[in-house]
Length: 389
Figure (cartoon, one colour):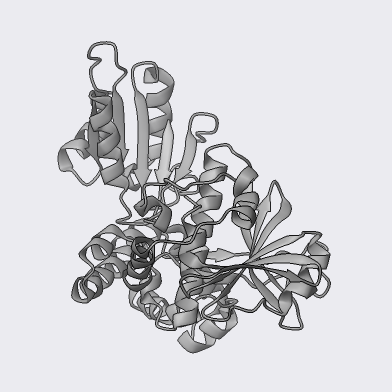
């Protein structure tokens, strides 16, 4: 089986139906359909599609995690029927940690994470470079982005990465879509996941998070603003993370003197909610880097993780990609500053790395600086992001 999770309205259903169309045989089932709910409740095996020709059918179960004891039923279905069809399960909650259902599915599925659109995907991944060649490509043969790429990136920055507002490229559509999405996450998904009664207070919490994007998250500060207990806010944030409203990055502390150890940085899946230009741009880069790391991990290329660097002296490098638990590629984000950040000299010697990347929003920038013996590439966002997934 394959479990595909991702934010609401990022394209999971469209992707699943596209795979079904390619396969040519199989069936799509959605938990929100009354007929499917009845069939699944009475006999899960009744939804297995019939074999046609030489192709193995594809059974798609969309939003199945909303069902009671869904893991137990799915485990039984897989153990008795897996030779008859392939099974694809999709959902807008993190399927691997969803608490409804007690039976383990370990060893029976591969987890995958579907992200919304990125620049490379809009370019049909024609420039995708895997990590073994990424640093060499960037420092030896980088190509300037075309005007088309700059325009696509500008649309992503303005309208966010989700298909409906991105392709409409209309501010009114964006405002309506955004309001509807947040309402559905809280009033539908969160209600199904947690049964929490304080939905109006959680809506207030979501209104406070955009102004805290791209910053270390202080739960204590949120607790004081909302006049709610620290543990309650922490629990609410955990639910919102599971439902893909935001993601957070941990600090990297190994071998770094005076490193910040506890505070995670917060980023939104829909960065169009962020008003501050610098924070929105950093969030856009964070989302692209996370998508690259998740893709490489989920497809078996290696174990990749995204962190950030900060010490108690308030020096910071925005991102650090770990490759198989080791520091691999540090990335700093600046809206307009094309000179290497003063933080490079502080962190590079402790990371034992020779290359770093500083991404700027200004188009047409690509210059390598020899900075205190380290190679720092200052590059335009579009010229850099096109090489990712």
